[in-house]
Image (cartoon, rainbow, N blue to C red):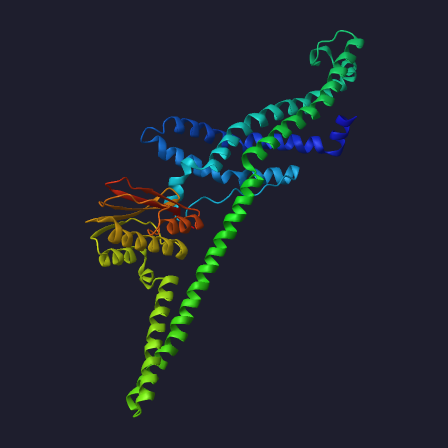
Length: 405
């Protein structure tokens, strides 16, 4: 009875329409998956890798494509896949061969179409054959021998054909249900972001928003200190200088001079605080800021920067302070005669490498080097810091952070 109910309530019909539609909707993605398999096999060749990247880029768009029929006919819903890592098109393209979301979508394209065919073909046969089989006793009586579609010589034999038609009618909804459940399983496993992925995406978005808000707050505080507090301290210093120059009494002049010196020290400390919040050199870009650091370094330093886009303020500040700290360490502790700073994208991350030809022996957990602080700064951006510094040198410090951190 459940099978008959499935036909009567329309559920079996909706599932059949979904499967038949899937045969046509899934054909091109299935062909795309076959091309992807060939491209993956040929990726060691020059032409294979660009083809594979193109296939994966298209596959990443297909979850939305498959969601339309599933939503309209079966009421299925699933979230969009997590966004691709990287802020620029070039970084995203380079990250595609290692993107698990794209590979899962490609796997779904490969598995989806055979399931649709396996469900739609028996379903269509049932729609055509089952009614004819069930009503075959009537056909046997009314239709001449040359037009009968079943081989039955007796009236009793026609009821065996009718029984087969009824069995087909009752069994087909369960087969349709099985194929739809298999496809549902594929959707959940390959297209639907897992709860862990959704959780990670939400946490990453929240952390990025917090970093952005913190950077904006620091810039606002810096501007207020520079335009407000610092300007008032400068005005106070000028007023004290006038008092000192116009006063004829030595005690008053001495007090004014002491107060002016205190204001000067406060201004110097305030400027250091402001520079620590957001180095003014970064206003012209990270490449210019790093070149300025290298030019001021006590150890001759060569800078090589290859960026496809301007990194966020928090990332740029972290990289700037890392280079400043490392160049200071080299000048104080390494006994080096030259250093090199290299910054370039690596997949969806930025890789900063600072090397010197000094005596080595540095360690991330060492005291007095500031490397532990740099490691914590990198970790705050979901990055990491590694130190390779054997005794006798050379020393290589590598810091990697997400490009869009």
